[in-house]
Length: 171
Ligand SMILES: [Zn+2]
View: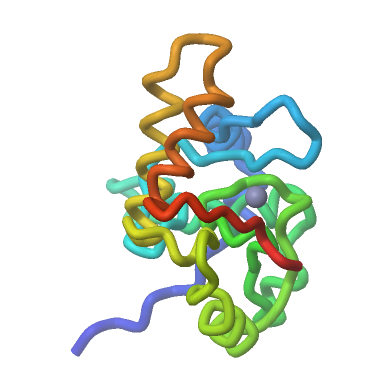
């Protein structure tokens, strides 16, 4: 029998200055106020940023979704305790810009994904899939010469749409 996974202690994680510092160091912030903040760390199959937290010796080690951690850092944990999920209005699951997050529920998430993934040129229609897209952007930023990140990001995003179509988030 497997033990039920204990709830993630978001409040404690968001109050841990070393965890917050590690989180901040892995978010690449473009210069524009509306730019995505791309995650430069580990990426899950769904394209979401991941961060390992906790201590192996204390038995508290786990891997968390960083956009939820980011929400807890920016806004506190009350809504998370009430079962809300953190959604991306920009449809870039690795994005850490708090302006691009909204609270919702899982059903909304599923319905939005189904409605938008068929849109030509849309982020959700990227030929590489969500993980491939987020990894391509991450690696493009890490490999870019200083000052050329914006061009590297644009090229990495365009590479997922061989047809040349492009469509931003629709919210
Ligand atoms: Zn974004």
